[in-house]
Length: 120
Image (tube, rainbow, N blue to C red; front, side, top):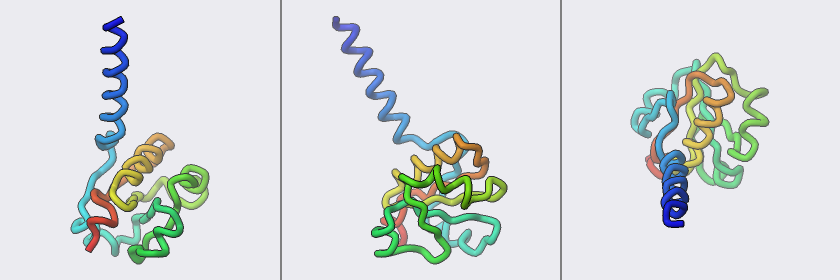
């Protein structure tokens, strides 16, 4: 019975760590680095926060594709040939979105660390 407890604890830790650590092949940039990339017309800038959060504060050039709708809209509204730069409020949802995009075949995906909370 004790082994079962260790297995359950191990699985829980595995899933927590998997959610927190960056996805393989996803580039991580700071908001300072983002400033230098905003003028690049070959990149697609996506904000995965809710429409209410987006309306309250957003960065010019970012398109709002809420996380819950991302995969449904990504195929129609994003090009797999261009890099996708993803932001949210703190960096957690955008990290999740980055993983989802990688799994669905987007090869160049960048996550903005710290999200809008780090944007000044």
